[in-house]
Length: 183
Image 1: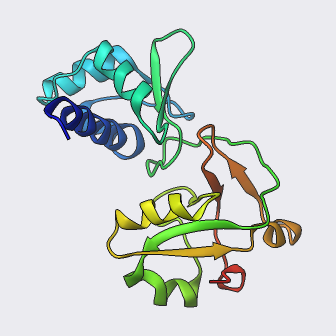
Image 2: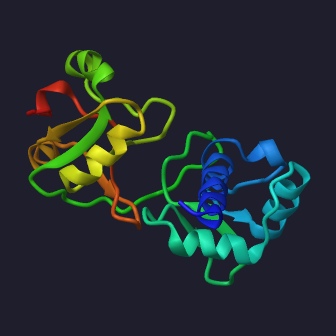
C-alpha cells in the first residue's frame, strides 16, 4: 500500500471508531439514527491530532470498498451504516426475507462457544452476515485464523426470526441460534 492509501485507511478506521463506538472521544454528538455533523467531526478530530477535512472525508466515503459510511443528501452529516455499539444510536433497517443461506465470518478460536451458544452480536447491536462465503472469510481474518459458518437464514426467517438489510448489503440479525448453523 502506498503512503496515501495507508493514510486513508487509518482515517477510515478512525471514522469507524468514532461513528460506531466512541463519538464522545472527540466530543461528537450522534442522533438516534447515527448521524453526526461533519463540521463538528472535523473540529473534534483535529483537536485530537487527526488531520482531516471535508475532502478527505468524502474520499474515504467514496473509496471504502465495504461502503461503511454515508453522507447525508445535504452534505452536512455523516454516519456509519452499521456496526454500532454506542447506546445512543438505534438505526432502523428494513426487514427483508433473506436468501436460503447467509454466512458469518469469525475466528476459529470462537467456534466452540458459537456451537454451544449461537452467534451473539457482542458489543454491536446486530450479528453481521454476508451473502457470500468470500466476504465472510475476509471478515473472519480480521479476528484471527478465519472460519466461516453457513446459516440457514431462510429457515430461521420462516420460524419467525427477523433479518434486516443495511444499505451496503450487510445482512443483520439479532441472534443466530446454534441449531441454524449448518457448517
